[in-house]
Length: 467
Ligand code: 4AD
Ligand code: MG
Image 1 (cartoon, rainbow, N blue to C red):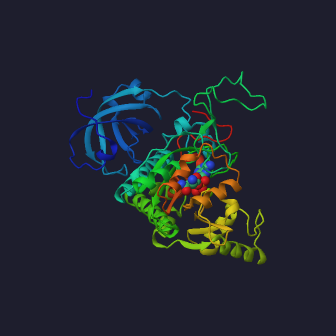
Image 2 (cartoon, rainbow, N blue to C red):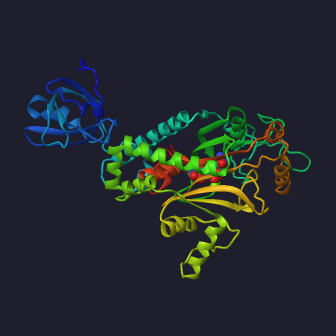
Image 3 (spheres, rainbow, N blue to C red):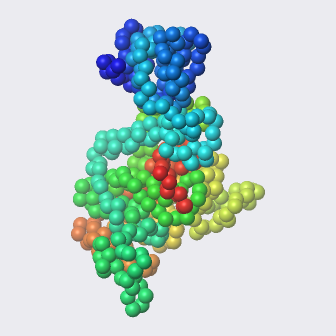
């Protein structure tokens, strides 16, 4: 066995040197057969496609063939032959088969047509299925597209800390990090926990966003992007929220909000185009099995400009809809934070295309956004997508020290740990902008999957941290 070098199935299926001796390794999807011949569908994860292995029963020990069950891992030596019946151009006529790992009879991915909820409970094994193989190959491709896009555009990949003492979004949804003995917490006279003896000598948490440090990078290197995990202890059990998700945050000196919107639109379209060009087999599968309008939607996003309007204009459209009898679960009026149903109404029913909403009321946005002259709205921009709602959140930043301080005082943000952030506005401040793209929300859009738990290998959500 194994005198021939292994060929990955994705490459094997493109070969035309019939008669060549080959070796393939992978996991058995199915074995079926007659008295004289067995057909084994083998997959090694390199492509959604299986290769058909043909084994003449008389050449193999019956006991060996019995071990080749769905889920078992095998290594096959054989001859590459032209195929007529397998749906591929080639198949492998087996000369020797080694069972590398048998598969116990309680293999959870045995039956087809299990629910996604069942798959989540077996997330460690769902990776072996066609759907999740396709999703995670596409996820990989999107990561490559993102790095390539920013590299081509002169952005520096900038690593921001995971453990931090500041709450970027000011929403208080942070997971604390401590090495203190929770059974014996030191408290001061007022009953507050004393962090001086803790690992970092102060209260620290997992980051909700790399933006604040990203701004330090942008105001030195010109343009940076982060791409890392972020954490939010928000108790949102929705198909669009994770407690641990990946975010891409570009931050650019000398960009105003229009430059920021142009970048966001160009960037998303680049990623979608990349998927269409590089993930054809997986997308074709998902379009057929998961969402019949997926490819159409991806092309549509590429071919149409995103609709840009202000929050105030958006509210007027929503109020008009309500007057015309449209029912929403949550009320709409100027000042409310838009719910997903409102965002989706604008995108899916009113404009029927992606929307960029700008100039939100300052009360519903973070402290760092640039104030407009009206004193009521800030230069925020949210990109809203069909089926997803908000996919990007960003803004032009407040570059003026006094205005930023005024906002910080207004919101009573504890600034003692933020002096370094304010220094950007003291030492050569400059106009700058940035945004955050939720990686999993992009993957939802590109794969047509419905639940964010199904586009990250091992999802973290309230009450779930299995695997
Ligand atoms: O709108 P958000 O909260 O913006 C920020 O964090 C800014 N600091 C970004 C920036 O300007 N640099 O989050 C940005 C994006 C959202 O639009 C959404 O796509 C995603 O991150 N996101 C989540 N994705 C999954 N689960 C969650 N709980 C998410 N919260 C936000
Ligand atoms: Mg947001």
